[in-house]
Length: 332
Image (spheres, rainbow, N blue to C red):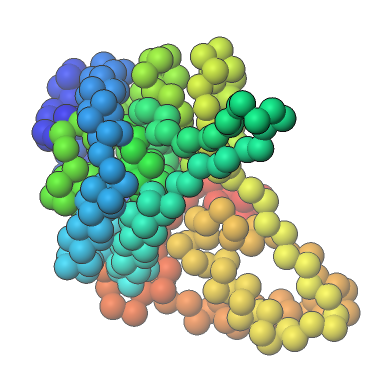
């Protein structure tokens, strides 16, 4: 908050668990709405100067952050694997891909062109100028603890907005390291703020504070509806990416070997914790036995284990609650 690492105002902490071992990695601050309000205020103050910088100046910060990450990608990937459980190779790739978003929006900020609109009379001139909106709040899920953040943070910062990010309490260190990358790259104090704490209280603070002009949310449809309801009272702009349903239709004229392999690749990616991960398969009766046999054979070959272990293809679910939920779905 405001360029400084601080404890939660209420002194609260959160035991961060490695889902592969269910051991405590470390304790991290766990605050409430007062921390969110402090972060919003810092972002609001910083917006006055950050928004006045040229897109070239803002772009240099994003580019420098990308370079900082690339130099430490494997180290950062390990941090993400420890808290999310995903294989180290996937976590490292996620960090490397994050630099693409930083670089893209570093350049895209220079192309935020306006428009000249023909007027009906010669004495009138109509033009459109794009301006940064203000403080942007982000609330993101744990399945992609870097990707979910960077695509919004990079866009907001490149446009001249300041950010208050609230990552999932299950993967907060990844977001903290992304904020550190931007800090090391020269982002002024208050431009990027990251908070960890009570999700409901912090979300309500983002909705209620008039300085927070937009909220970007990645998560469940249920929470998305709650945010829409809250935003309707304050007319806060929203950008929502909500959970979906992904059925796979298997017809008898398809290449079963290819489709079976693709199904396995997508179904088990990130332990199935992906918005577009297949959730159900509708298979034509003429090929259901062959498809089932192929998928079963391929599934048996998937290496399950600790994401830090070499050769692991699928790590654990994010926590015991999700594990029990999936087990109930399978056995019911």
